[in-house]
Image 1 (cartoon, rainbow, N blue to C red):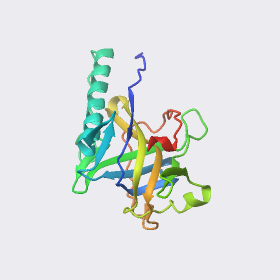
Image 2: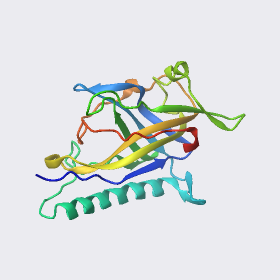
Image 3: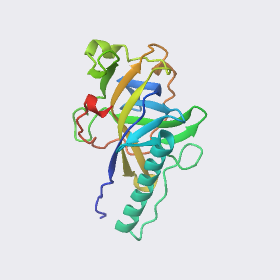
Image 4: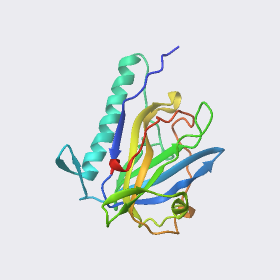
Amino acid sequence: MEQQIKSETIKIVTPVGTRFRYSWLVEPDEYKGVKKWKTEAIIPVGSTVTIDGKEHEATSYISDKLSELIESWKQQLKAAYPKREFTLTKNKDGKPSFPFAFEEEGLVIRLKKNYLKASGGTNKPIVFFKHDSESGQNLLMTDEEKQDMIKINPQSTGQISFLAQGYDAGANGVGIRCMPLSICFREIVTNNGADDFETTPAAEPSSYEEKETVSTGADF
């Protein structure tokens, strides 16, 4: 029996100006009995992130980091199981499926997080912050304020912190998943949000433990 190995997990914070579409951030979406919080983060080309005091073009930097994670995970699996053949998970068109892609609007990252833990109980929900321009601080949203986030317009902007990790779905292939941790809104436009989300089946396993991570306003 093959020994289970774990992928490296990396944490990424998107730049200010990130937009959000097809969002189920407060109430999870349900597909075939599986509930997930989810959104698609859209990062405009030309936006920047600063890492260790150095500025990078955000879409190139983040897509490179995710591509590097895929490659390192494939190498890790091949080293652990040299006799096994590995294939990437496929989308409905039979092409390799990745949780990120470039579109006209910029780099799009598909983020989703299981509502339920594999061992029972509920995973930690996405943590919500709002940026207060007067104080310059990121303030934790109240439960009442979060209700306005149930349906948000895709013109809403902010930043999102997420984890990326490799998975092995056996015969269904290998890949990486991107799991939202916390979100900090800068400009909020309500309504016209989750209603236009098209649910699609997930290629990766639907039952896995989310990594317990503490989210604070300092992420942004």
